[in-house]
Amino acid sequence: MSEEIYHNYFFDEPAFNTHDGGYVPLEVADAPEKPLAIPALLKPDKETDTDIWYTVTAQTGETPILPGKKTKTWGYNASILGQTIVYPVGKHIHVALENHLSELTTFHWHGLIVSGPYVDGGCHAPVYPGETKHIDFTLNQPAATTWLHAHPCPSTAEQVWHGLATMVLVTDDHINSLPLPHHYGVDDIPLVLQDRRFHEDNQLDYHADYDPDGVQGPTALINGTVNPFFDVTTQKVRFRILDGANRREWRLHFSDNLKFAQVAGDSSLLPEPVYMDHLMLTCAERAEIVVDFSGYHEGQIVTLFSDDVPIVEFRIHQFAPDKTTLPEHLLAIKKPEVDPKTPIRKIVMSGMDESVMMDNKKFSMQRIDATQPIGESQYWDITNANSKESGMVHPFHVHGTEFLVISRNGHEPYPNEHGFKDTVGVNPGETVRVLVRFDLPGVYMYHCHIIEHEDGGMMAQIQTYDPNKPKPTYKLMDMDTLMNAFAKERGIDPKDLWMAGMDSYRKMGMKM
Image (cartoon, rainbow, N blue to C red):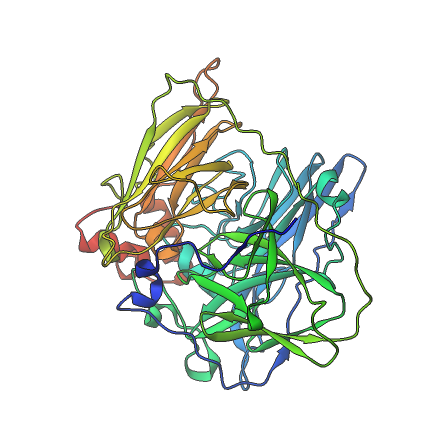
């Protein structure tokens, strides 16, 4: 059977970030090529048949990124980004969260179905300098490539820019049984796509680079590596790709328009492989692809591009023939049933720059914007109110759940959107319908994942609850407490504190 091969990026071309007035094009850095950094796997502190224990440490470091001085960076159990964490479905997981930074942070498990707001790690779960907090949970979700990043509103973007982001792999028996590449670091490779601008002595200066529509830099960092190359030693390689950028969309293709199979999205395998030679990811989206290099021989080079800029070079070495084939069916997706009497939740993302809002309001830390019973499936209609002529794609993310994309303006979703997701790009003038169900009670955020937009107020909160029990009360962080803590940690008066997201509130005469 010959499969259809898709040759486009699906999203609306007039909304690509290349059309933004503040767009920063990628440039090839004046730096030597270096082996692609492959994050180490984080070793458990202890493991039994039923439980597993980890310690995750947010720490400062210095990383040799460019020739010359090392760059001051932050990471998880590493100087930048972090060691890759593996969580098996069904085991009870215990995590010690250590903060070795000089200021508070949070640990948000993007894509994990865990209780909110404290385990989920949004802005209501601060871990202060020198503090260790303990969380535990058991995952009941499909295998997926998820990630961990800081989420202390309104400093989420700045802390991620420093380097606080790392991959979290959820595994289960089903995915382990499939004929996919599984040898981490050899034929199962993470690719964290980010961009940065380097200032004097190779240092980052977030304040200098700040743009309320999202901070960008001209230098691509792949797993924290500039001008990386990877030695291909197997015929087939599985790439777990994360758009970990604050703002940048990545439009990916290989030299020779080499085709590949996308086998998974954000939160699960796809029902069947989708074959393509172009892939676009909006901020926070993930894709797992399998690339077959059988058409190349030792000594050749295959290059991965974003638009027309090379970002990773794959150097082909001798490899053994691999006659395995991808299954026609990867995962049975069971669509939850929706009671026809259930109202459709309507959500509108609007504005640009400092005017960004969710449902005509900016985020307020202690306001609950919506409620939903656990176990009840609802349609959410997510509308991007930007104009098609001058707007941008807003990636919409929900904490603490996974959803199915039902339609785009009443039409079929994109071919690679038929698995479970937690982030979906919404074109200007478009309404995307998603099917959402929460299984755990708590308070969860939903927001645009252009990180400066969420810091600037394009974010809201939903409380999920057990309809058979009284609604619990949660202690939610307030802005004065948060700002006073940051000011104290930085040794300044609160009135002198600069945090990127607060500009958006001040310029519109609002308080978070």
